[in-house]
Length: 130
Image (cartoon, rainbow, N blue to C red):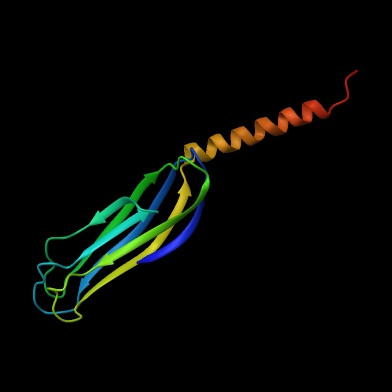
């Protein structure tokens, strides 16, 4: 399992994206190429379990999942790669690339508007009254 600690703000919706690939380097069909999963802490956000993969075939999928944490905290983003004992030989490879965690534009916009409102309020309180 690959994992990375990420800091997320309560109530902000995040878009979690990644590219995943399963590649068969062998020449025969594999009826159980395994599973790729994504979790935040122990909450499953994504799971991909193709039924089979042909010889010399590459399967790819794009993950794009929204997640809104209830608390502000450090969370652990995890990617799991499982292959079953029935897989013979090291012909199946799992790949992960281009992982991004970004606030949704609407959430980011609300944060910016809230910050600007606080600045305007602070400046108006700092002005001397005539």
